Image 1 (cartoon, rainbow, N blue to C red):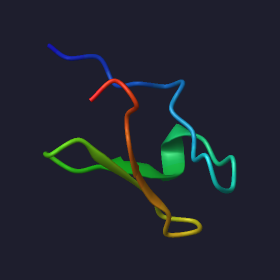
Image 2 (image 1 turned 60 degrees about the vertical axis):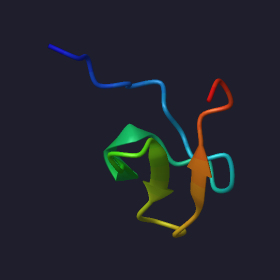
Image 3 (image 1 turned 180 degrees about the horizontal axis):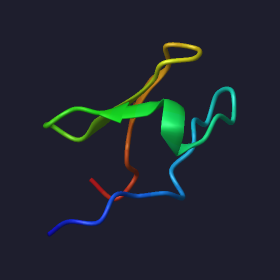
Image 4 (image 1 turned 120 degrees about the vertical axis):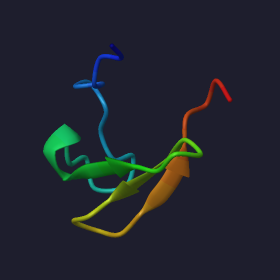
Length: 42
């Protein structure tokens, strides 16, 4: 089973994992400020 990334946080508003939603294509979306980003390693 894949472990959920807890250290994930929004680069724009600094909100942490509870507010972050990750789409299947690897894009992260912050529900608080609506910012979208992808992991740097991709």
